[in-house]
Image 1 (cartoon, rainbow, N blue to C red):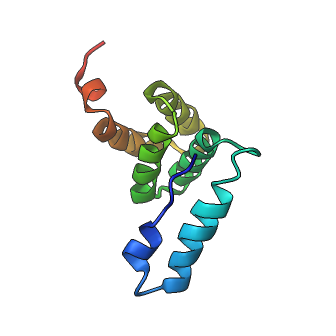
Image 2 (cartoon, helix red, strand yellow):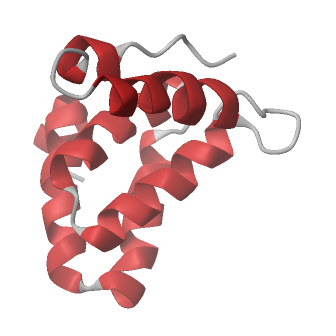
Length: 112
C-alpha cells in the first residue's frame, strides 16, 4: 500500500497550496493508489524511467528511493538504466548511475 504523501504540503503548501494539494491528494493519493490496475512497484519503474528520460535528477533520486520501498531491487534498477541508455542517452544513464551509487553504497564500493 502506498504511504500518505505530504511532500507537496510540506515543501510548497504556503507558496502553492493548490499544487501541493494536487501533488499529495491526486497524484500520490488517487493515482498511485490504483494498485489493482497497476501495482506501485510497476508504477515506480515507469516513473523512474520517465524521470531518467527527462533528466529530472532530484525527482529521480526521490523516486528511486520510493522504488526500493516498493520492492524494486538494485539489480532491476541497474537493468532499467542500462536498457534506457540506448533509448534516452548514454550521458543520462551515466548520471543516473551516480544516483544509484549513492543509494547503494555497498554495491558501489564492491569489486566484481
